[in-house]
Image 1 (cartoon, helix red, strand yellow):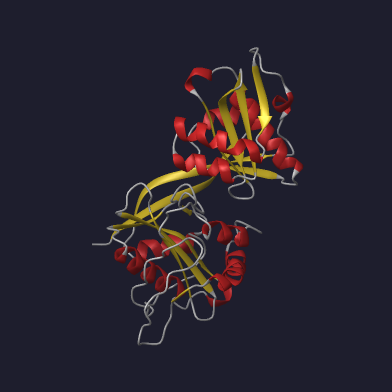
Image 2 (cartoon, one colour):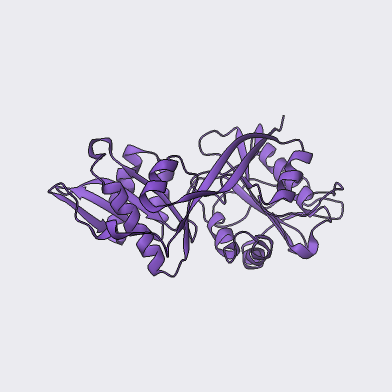
Length: 322
């Protein structure tokens, strides 16, 4: 879901890869008798593949290594694989949806600029599709596989990737967006304000609190958000008389905020805005100049609360694998 160059000619690719049995170690695939264009990556490849992503991700400066590391450490139980080339000049991650096992995702596709235009991206997509079929997927998507994903879809400015997807028969079926917050200009004073209602307190979630926050998130929303809250760099929560009523997290990606939510019985008290301000202030203190609010639903809330603007737009693609 990032620059792949102009892969106009089909490239030979490997056969099926074997199922990954643990999130720590890549699956082993059967060797293909022909000269190999794609191979299964190994743990020792990940550092080099992070550099490939860094070189290719011109719209995500400095995030390539962290992104590869994040995708290589997904939630327990996820079926996934990572593919590369013999020269380690391209990388693709693929996974099976935790919501619908018939849906597969191409989570990341990156080709080093020096290797673009040689069919690397096309070969990696083909090998990823073969792996997804072997895992039982009937559909492949260039779309985020929550909670551990690179982007909601293909950033429209990574035009070569969108062109490659369309040339391979993928249809555009949805549009999503991120919002951007200028952390230098945003008024984040709400993070230090006192809640209007008595008995409500605000807290930074330390290691001892993360399990309780994750349990609250899982009860009110879903396990995907709970995992993100547990894994985030920072997490804050509100409690009323000792009971958690709202949360906000950041850092699933280095400069990304989210998720956040308030229990229905506590909405309208302003605690969501306060937690948002606390998280963004923490991000600013960490040296970040801007924050991305990922896969946004309520545009109006973030626009009013912190002056966020809709900026990154993503196209989501899918293709039938049957």
